[in-house]
Amino acid sequence: MEDTIRVGVSSCLLGNKVRYDGGHKHDYYITDALSRYFSFVPVCPEVECGLPVPREAMRLVGNIENPRLITIKTGIDLTEKMLRYSAARVKELENDDIDAFIFKKNSPSSGLYRVKIYDQSGRVHGKGQGLFARSLVEQFPYLPVEEEGRLQDMSLRENFIERIFSYKRWKNFLIDSPDFRKLITFHAHHKLQLMAHSPKHLSKIGKLVAEGKNIPVQILFKQYGENLMEAMSLKATVKKNVNVLHHIIGYFKKHIGSDDKKELLKLIDQYHNGYSPLVVPLTLINHYIRKHRIIYLSDQTYLEPHPSELMLRNHV
Image (cartoon, rainbow, N blue to C red; front, side, top):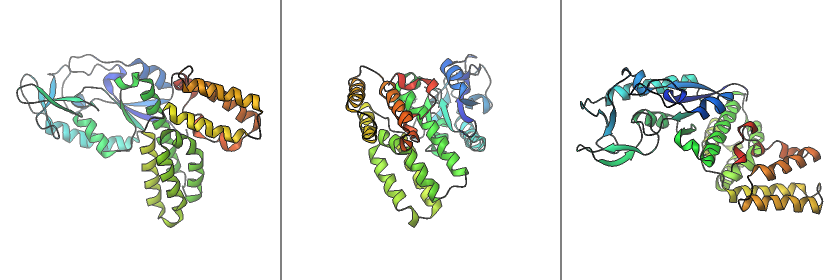
C-alpha cells in the first residue's frame, strides 16, 4: 500500500484501562499480529464523551429501533450525551481517514452485533447496535467493520482483513488521478477476487465498466466502489474458491503438461474436500505463474489479497 492503513479500534482492546470497572480487554491478536500492518486510532466513546473511569455500568433500554442508554443502578439517561459525542467523533474519524474499525462486542456504545436491549422491567426483549457503532456505520456504510470476538472465526477474520486491503486499494485508486482507463485496469486486476466473493457482483460490475464511457465519471466511481465493497462483504466460500482455481487452470493450457495439471487438480480436490487449506493449491499456482510469466494472473489481487505473513489462507 502507498501509505499506512489506519484502523479505528475500541480503546480497551489495545490494553487501555478505560472500561467501566477500570479494566481493559486487551486483544493480543490485534496488538501483535495486526500491528505490523495497521496503525490504530483508539476510541472509547464512554470516556471520550466525559464519563469517568471507573463508572456505573449502563445498558440499552426501551425501543429496539431507538433504544436509550441508561445507567443500571441510578437510571441516568446518557443517550443525548452519547449521540452528540458520536456525531462529532465520526466526523473526526472521517478527517483521520480511517480504513476500518474493530469494535468491542456487547458494549452498549460500541457493540456492532446483537447488543442486548432491555425493557423497563429489566428483561431482554431485543438486540441491536451500540449507539456509537450505529452512528459510525450509518455514516460509513462501506467501511470494513468487525467485532473483536468474531475475529476468532478464521473465515470471518480472512474476510474482514481482505476487505480492509480492498478498501485501501480503492481509496488509493481514487486519489491517484483516476480516469476510465485506470478503472478498466483496476477492475481487470480484481476480477478473480470478485469471482471468489460474488460472481453476481462480478457480472454487475463488469456491465457497469462496459457501459462506463456513457456514465459521468464521479457517478461511475461511486457505483463501482459501492458494488466492490458489497461484493467483498460476502465471504469467499470453498465452492467459490474452487471455481476460481479451475478458472485459473484454463490459463495454463499452453504452459503445463498433463501430469502437472493432474497434480494441481489433485491439490484443488483435497482443498475442496477439506483435507488441506487454500494456500496449498495456491502455492503451486503461484509457482507456475512465476515460472511461465503469465502476466494476467500475476496481477490478480486474488493470489495475494493481503500479506502472506498473516497466514490467513493457511486456515481456510
